[in-house]
Image 1 (tube, rainbow, N blue to C red):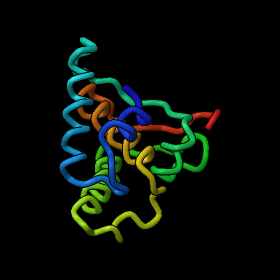
Image 2 (cartoon, helix red, strand yellow):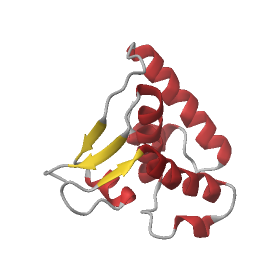
Image 3 (tube, one colour):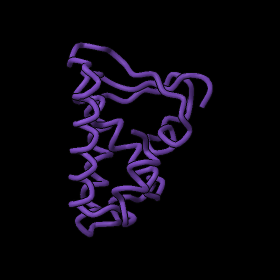
Length: 122
């Protein structure tokens, strides 16, 4: 399951509706459960995907965000899903961006990542 799959299958609106967000969260949680990976202290998740780097504002190699900071960006998306679209100012628009952020957030929560850090390549 990837961002493109969620964007195509679940997200019909930009930004997605709160119902669409809930459907996507359920789908990602199901995929994580099926993976067999247990929650554990995993430290930082290293990312170089340009889409995620843009969403999170990680511009320089080594820039990092804590899990709570990623959650705050996701909460902006959740607020936009309820009609407060001004909350997305500065966050790249599009269903793929919303799906990537949702997947990242769910992975961090369910697998135990403490934060994300930009690495070379993005």
